[in-house]
Length: 233
Image (cartoon, rainbow, N blue to C red; front, side, top):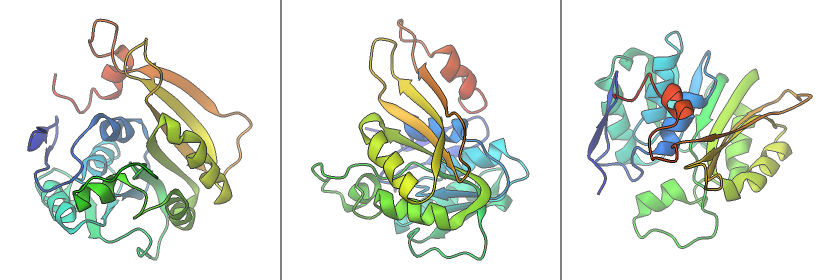
């Protein structure tokens, strides 16, 4: 059973009313994404990634969108108890209906990714994990509408979702500029990808491959350095 709260260096995340708990994917994305200017977090859940990006970019204002009412309330409470409360706004809405009079320099999302697997009986958890409520096409249509011309969109997705995810990005006029394949251990195949997109075509895409753990189970140097501002040793 997941803990009802998770304490980081500068903030705490309570998650008893959120379908999707604090996990490695969210921590990776919050630490890996390039962040600057106005930031939008699509599907904020507990508010974890919004809090991480606010910590990393002290001059930025962050808007956190969440469709689930209970999660939106909990994210609002997590933000209110953080040092970044004056710079993060939580909005309870679907991204399809969100129509601000502005664009964002940074957009991040840990999106729903299951397209055809058996659904969880918990409606909130199903919404958080399945693309019925937010398909890849709808996500990228929203990103294309909300991303500033020089902005960047970053996401974390399972390895087997990479190809259709990038294909939908291309159809919306976005190109992948960075990809990091993440293995759990050196002997395992990559389980997830961190991917970044922009409107700008690049001559060559930046690719890398990293591990979360060493062969002895300890945290890898890459993961330790990436998350050093957040995890309490």
